[in-house]
Length: 153
Image (tube, one colour):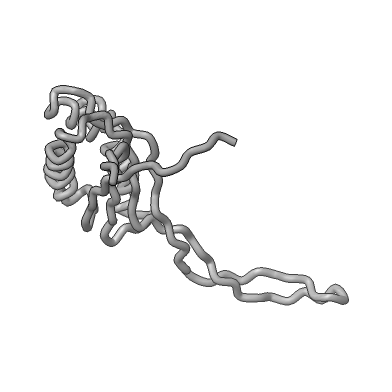
């Protein structure tokens, strides 16, 4: 059997107690800025930190997405017209999409021999960054992936 060399790294981050208002509302932005790079003008993001630690560009950010779930946040009353022109007030659930976590997908640019050390560097960097209380992260995982199929339509 032929060895399958990975070409992507996936980082999944789960938020703890995220709400879209109050002190925790910037959690998704903080995580996005760090995972994608150029965290702040005076701080480096994950891709820049990995490049600095490894001595070469080992990962290239491709995709970032929030993991969201619709959650009921209350009830509102709306007016609906019935057949015959009668207007009736109806209670409807208000729903919002709450960010439960985030996913970052990177192109792996290193060799197969360096994969384990690159993953260890990413694990250590993410652990040190995400353990900071203001980041609001519960846990994270790193996956190694191989694209099996791609076709432009």
